[in-house]
Length: 117
Image 1: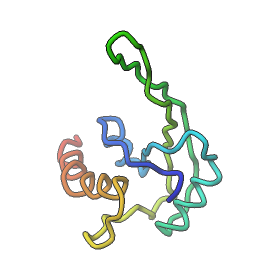
Image 2 (image 1 turned 180 degrees about the horizontal axis):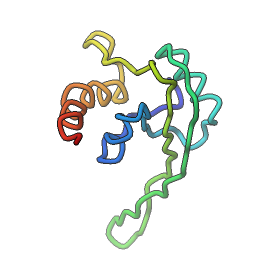
Image 3 (image 1 turned 30 degrees about the horizontal axis):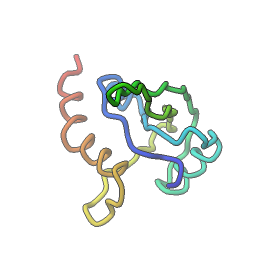
């Protein structure tokens, strides 16, 4: 769980969940093979493909000094059909990443299924 920071909850990531694709932010120094190995090991799923892109940091002003936040990488992980990342119980929640997935499963995913034509 070293490389993955947290799950991404956006409109696009909710739509991708219906296609068995999961979106999360990872550390910028982690590689695709590390993330793939961690996801397969921790969740017990098979990963078909991984797409990644680097997002720039945002500018922050502290009075006269202009600074910026660190850049980060976003991964979109596609799982084989029949596999999914299950919602976790309260005892198993140990990070912001897992809390975000629980929120997606309980609140947002049922709404996305209801909105399908």
